[in-house]
Structure formats: structure tokens, C-alpha cells
Image 1 (cartoon, rainbow, N blue to C red):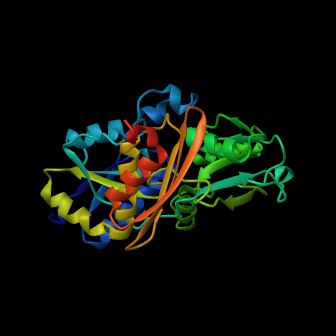
Image 2: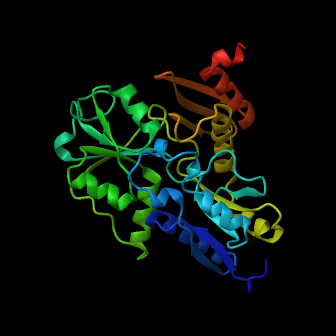
Length: 312
């Protein structure tokens, strides 16, 4: 692509989405490509009060971005990969997964509700945990059935404010989002997050299994746009992409969306280790499988999670 032609980068308007898009713009600038950001408002941004399960099909935070890409209003869409459903339009392709940020979930706790002696999660008995994620609710219930989960929506600063104001005793957020916002603030590209005296703990991803592709960005382009594809492909991290392929392939196999409590996290280089959790009929099933081929690994994990399907 000629550097004289400005690339239009589509993004949501939240502080986190803008931090991710600006990071992508900076990497493309290093390759000599000028870019401008185009903010696209999505369904998930418009309704910040209801749980995700009440808002309909997967893709709440991406469909309008994908439409802008299909219509040629933007050349590249920057997504948090975990927001992308498994059934994106055939005309679009994720051309690059840059180096992955921390995939873990982070527990943020008001000090008076921190209990290091508690098993599972270091929270005082009957503490109220804020989250909008079905996966996080299921994992909390599995590890600490005495805890109460309350609905938590809004952007990251709003969620932190709700915690500081006492609407919840603790909340769960993606560590990656907090890290990206902290870096953006340090670079003068956003406001510093208000945390007060909160205690922050990153949870073990082998136990508190992250969402598939959590911490990863998806750089999505039109399949027939060869010039943009060639440029964006230079931002790909092969190792991160390979791990995410295993997680996303399993997501498709178990037919899980944001309404289904499901987690998958892969680690490793040549040999991958895939940790999974899936709620079936109100009970959480877990599996751990290893292998070199991401697709085969996903099929093995699906068989371990859903043996009754294999028996049909």
C-alpha cells in the first residue's frame, strides 16, 4: 500500500478501544503508513444496563464495525479478539494477531473485603462480586459458591467507580485492558484510572480460565483487499496467533457465545497446553489437553468436555 494513501482504522469509542486503535496506528506508522481513526458506535456501547445474555446474539461490540469494513467506510477494524463471534462474514478475515497482552482476569477488591485465608478466591464470605460475564459468574460459583455476583456494565473507568462507590465489594476485569489503559495514560493519551486503595490480584488462568483470545487483538480486513492485508500481516505474532486459533476453534466446536459460560486458554510454543471450562446443565466441566496442532487440540478438548456428543 502506498504510504501516501491514508488508511482508515475503525474502532469503538471507549477509552480501551481507542488505546488499542492508537497502538495499532503507531505500529503501522513505524511501517511508514499514515492512518486516521474512525469511531463506530456499536450495539453493546448503546445499552450499558442489561446483562449480555439479554442483549441477543454474539457480536454486540463488533457488528457495526464489521459493517463499516464491508461497506468500505474503514480499511481495518481493530477488535478485542474475545468480542468477535465465531461466525464473522466470509468476506472478512483476521489478518493479524499482534503480540498478546496478559490473558488473565484481574480481581479488584475493596480492602475491607480482602481475605487471604479464604480458599478459591481471597474474598470475605458472602462478598458481592461485580461482572457481566456468564463465564466469570460460573467460575466464581465453582470456586466460591458462597459469593454473590451482581451485574456490572459500562466502560472500565465506570466499572472502577462503581466499585469505589460501594456498589460491589470486588469486581472482575481483564488484566489486558487495565494494562493498556495504564500505558495510554502514561503516554499522555488518556486519563489515569482512579483506583483508590483497591487490592488487585491477577488470577491463575489454569483455574480461573480466561475467555477465548482474551488479551489478544484481532486486526480484521476485507479478504479481497490485498494491499491492506499485506501491510497488516506484518503486525502478526505467529505464536500468539497459533494459541488463539486453538482457543477460537474450540469456541466454534462447543458452539459457545457470550451467553454460554465457557473459557479456553492455550500456552506453549511447539507443544500447546489448552485449559478449558464449560458449564453444562448448571455444572462446570473442566479439561486440560496437550498437542502440537491447534485444530486437533481443539477437537480433543471438545471430546473431553462433551463426551456425550462423541458417543452419538
